[in-house]
Image (cartoon, rainbow, N blue to C red):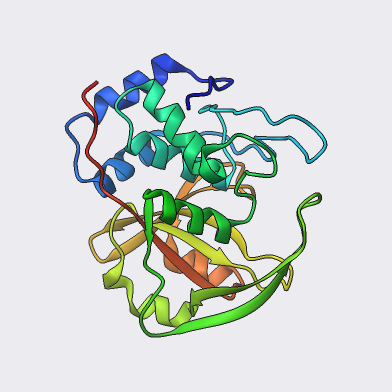
Length: 237
């Protein structure tokens, strides 16, 4: 099923994909694509919508919140043309690719679970230092309250396991709030021994890059969830 999205700049998508046509594997493609949007403006509520209104599928690349930044980069990394980008984005954002407010992956634990099932990513949150915390998700009006377990890697253990991070990995920061699973997300980039975080930062009003260690030190969190994009075979453009 193909759905025509709003605000899709096809010429920009073609330009980005032409620049990375020979770039592989997917982690390096994500590194290249994510750098393209550095400094672009942060915009909250980029998708809008509510349980009582019709959902519009939006594919804008001119401003981002943290989730749409990650979604757009992942969708571009697996695309060969604007149509495939839009189809990827729809399937990443919505459960089973069905456009609708209720089927949108509002909570990031659902986003991760559904994108693992769809084949876009694998969950790398495993090994030593894991912690499970119960969360009663109820911050999205119109969605039924749901109790889940959020599995993450404790912050101090994640720092010790930095060698396990690959360029292009996606990172989700588990919330300390009892009614929220994840409070922020971004893209990880390796620069020698350093790990950098690229993300759409509301506090800075734009897409930025900073040392992951500094972000971890400055923010309270229950832990870190690590997700790895899966390499794909691109269709011929």
